[in-house]
Image (cartoon, rainbow, N blue to C red; front, side):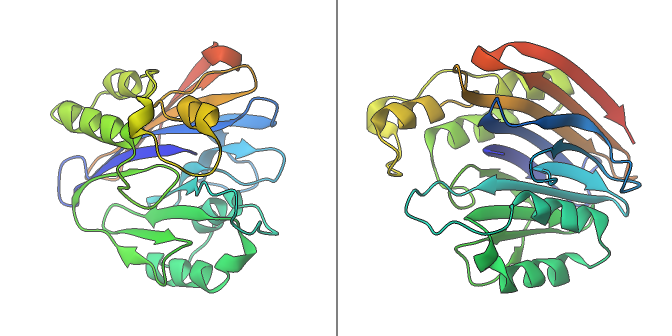
Length: 248
């Protein structure tokens, strides 16, 4: 998952509103959003290569999501980052205990940002931070650096989320995730991947022959814990493959 914008408003009629794009190589085998047969109560897409996921919900009103940190010089972890989301959704540890556990073994994973929470609390851990923290109410964004790092795509998507929070219906949230304009060169981050790749990755929605936005996912949670997940799937050059709409 390469871009997540979310409104965290505990006590609100809609305490959690999430809009997220998962960017990945099209060739990587993936299972679309749905219930996991081996983990009752978990609803998520699934990486069929390593078995984990990038965003999902679980029993006990659990929610978790992940982005990678983009840094060609970082050490490569021996384990898949997707298991960090799956572990929280399938587990029983509380938010802080789980994030503390992840922090203690963070060296096993390449760089990551992890969100884990429920309708009462939401925690955040970056592989580059010493310790996790609980988030205050607000509107946030995560791309492939730390929380709210002001990359152009994050600023654009986060502002887009702010503008629809009065009526955050899935079509409006999916529309903001479909923005394909690339940032001007002068505004691009410098993450060590070269200018052509920086340009490609600078749009909210990424489309190319081999790599791009595979899924756009919306999660809306109400104060009663009811959750709606909508996912659109895409192939090379942004070709639309289908849509799934689940209410749990």
